[in-house]
Length: 171
Image 1: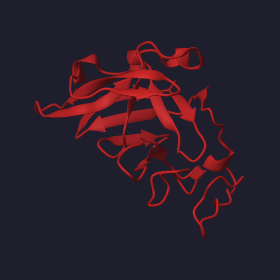
Image 2 (image 1 turned 120 degrees about the vertical axis):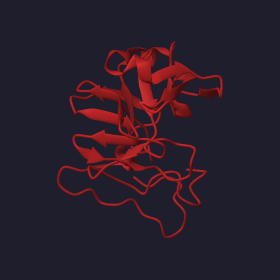
Image 3 (image 1 turned 60 degrees about the vertical axis):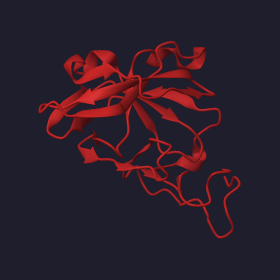
């Protein structure tokens, strides 16, 4: 499916075991997973889950949410650094990440404490950006979504092009 792509840009054809982000829905869909998701800040394991959730939205690599019970509570503290509103999920709460050495990554994670009804299952679950942290899915280190605004996890099982690349603001 082609949606407002710039001239000369075409959706990639998925290979075996791959998904195209152009087949993901809009509005987004929440889906549970059994893939192992691990998040590290330096050498510190912040989260380790075998029951994460993924949000699938047209043109975006999946954004992964880890149940609060699988996040090391000693590695997070509520942040006052920023606030945002998602048109689909509601108001985001941000979390600073604390490393073994006491270093702090401001607003390194976020959650939806009272999400909208379609996203109720991720209430309190945390998401993290592979641009700032090491995010692994099923043993593969995820690449960051370009552009600095979005936080999808690019792994070998998804193909784009992905929103965030130059010229994609209007997608």
